[in-house]
View 1 (spheres, rainbow, N blue to C red):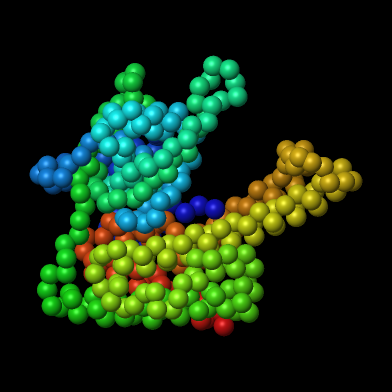
View 2: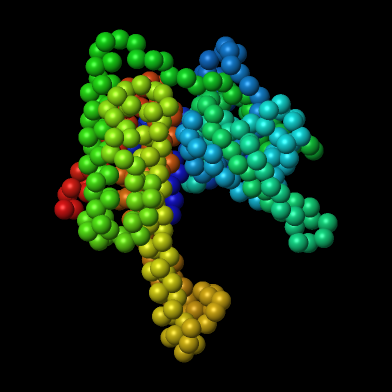
Length: 357
């Protein structure tokens, strides 16, 4: 199921401020679209001061990491990322840190605001083929801070570096500067808190509409079993650790929702494959190889997957998107804007759920 789609971001008001840059290592399938800003235009328009500029590897990825969130595991299998981790481990860039930026699935472009990840552990896996070297690497990372990409180095002709290297600069939004904005932040914080708890109670209802619609959604309870007083309205009013705790909880729900939809789709496709196998071979044949089914059956399964993917994008992802919403939040230019985005998506999900009751 897709999540990081620039075409969808362009349609959503809350994502209009996200700026995208070209990944010079891949071909943009929509590069003939002149409406999309190119990398050079973005860099030329960026600030010229060098305060807080750091040079480090740039890693396109399909998710968004929140500053200060808990340690996470990443599994890399591509030669570029394996080499990047090895160079980090060697100390080539000083402390083992790299910048993770969201890369869209449709245009292959990257957001210009990302998160510095510090590597705190790694494990290499050797290839089973003799002489093939490292086949993959798992790293444990700790998100640190948000940065803006200022310059991407050209490593196309390098014999030593197969990944991207960039100069990045600290991306810190200003504190609430005037009384009017402070009042707006406080009002939004209370609204977010109320809507957040309303949505939470619906998801945790064992006999509620969510569980009835998608049984796999019961996996969200593991992330939402915190005591009711863990968060308070004041926790959202300032861009601090408590605020990002609340944002991370909402992101956990979004990922759980996607996982539930994905599990349901997998079960439905498996049922279709079982029916196809019985009709084709008279028995259930393992391993499942869809290429052995009649062409019309293959087309039917593929069309079903495509329709379900489109339905997810246009319904569930509209409300509980685990990627684009959070890219919009970290790319926001003020804390007020971050609150406006978070409030909009939580309210929309509350209204959706209450409309189902």
